[in-house]
Image 1: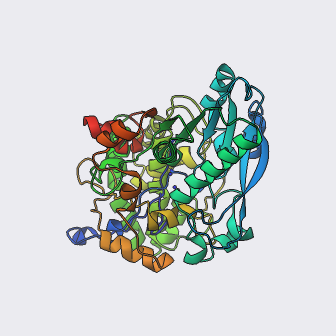
Image 2: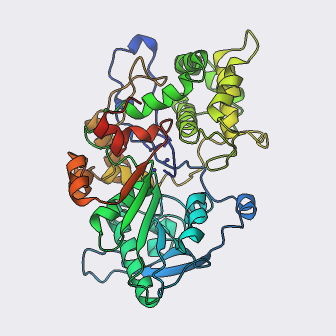
Image 3: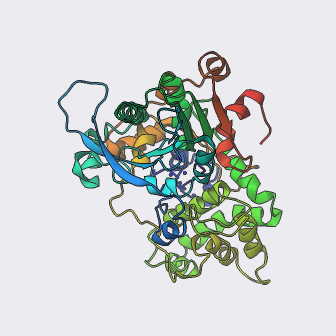
Length: 463
C-alpha cells in the first residue's frame, strides 16, 4: 500500500514514502520524536499512475470501463449521496453463466485502477485457461471513484474522508459483484479474489468477511500482520537494507553514511543551495527533511520492485534495479563525495530514461493523500529502524508522536487495534485454519512487505 513529512511511504508490490528528521551527531542520543512518528510506507508511490505510452504498449489487456453507483455508507441508513465506482470488465473468455464460468476479481488498491489492470498480467494470462470473466473494481476515493463529485470535495476534511475505510471498500466490492451476478443471471458463478500489497490484504480480508461471496483468494505481498506488535517494527526497513547489502556492502555503507553527510551539508551556509545543485532539484530546497524523504522513498520502492526484468510498474527501471543503483554508487571515480555518489545511484530510480533535467520532490500540491488518511485512522502499521541492520537513520516507533501528527494533519486519533479487531491478526494461524480456507499468501523474500505476511510470522522464517 504509499510520504512526506508525516506522510506514508506502496502490493502487487509496493512502496514507500517516508519522513526522516535528522539531528546533529552530537544529539544522536536524544529521542528522535519526528522519526518515531513516521507512518508506514504507503504501498504505492506518489508517482504511480497509468502512463499513456505504457497503456498503448499493453493493449493486449482489453477491458471496458463502467460505473456502478455505490452507497457512501454501507453501514448506516442515512440518506447520503451515492457515488460512481469505476470498474473495468472483460468477458472475452468468460464461459458464461450456463457453464458457471468463474469471475476473477482484483481488489483495487490505493490508486487508479487502470494502473493495476495493466500491471497484473497473471490474472489476464490465466483467465482464458479457466474461461473467466476479469473484473477490476476501483477503490473508493482513488482514481475516478470519488464521492462528493470531485477529489477536492472528497478530500476536503475529516468529515468527507470518514468513509474512506477498508470496510467500506470491501462492502463496495461485495455489493458490486452481487449486483453484477444478478444482472447476468450468474449467481452460481464462483468468484476468486486477487490482490497485491494493500489489494492483497483486501483480498484476504474479503474472503474472511464475505465467504459466501468469494470462494477463494490469492493475496500477493499482503502484510496482514504488520499491525500492533505482531511482527517487529524494524522488519520492513531491515529487509530493504538487506536487499542493498546483498548487492554490495560498500553500497549499503555509503547510503548509511549519507544521512549524516546530508545533514552536515544542510547546516552549512548556503548548504541547501548546494544540495539543490547536487541533486538537480527544480526548486530550491527548503529543508534537508524534504530531500531525505525523497531518498528514503526511492530506496524503499526499489526494494519493492527489484524484479529480474525491466519494468515500469513504479518507474521505468532496468532488471535488478538495486544492483544497478549500487553499481552507480560504487563505480564513481575516487574523490567523488558521498552525496554525489548517492545522486548517481538514485538517478537509476528517478531518471533511468534520462529524460528529466531536474526533479520535483513533491507532486501533491494539496498535501492530501488517501493513504495518509487511512494510515492515520485504521491502517496503523508501526515502523522503526534498527541501528546495525538498517541503512536508514535509527529511530523507534512512538505512538504518542504518531497520534499527535495525525491530529495535526487531519484532526483524528488513530485506532491502532481496530484492524486486528475487525479482521484478525493475533493468533492468525488459528483464525485462518478455522475460518479462512482457500487463501493463498504469496511473496518474494526481497519484498520488504514479506515480513508482515502470514507465513513469515507463523513459521518464523528468517528474512
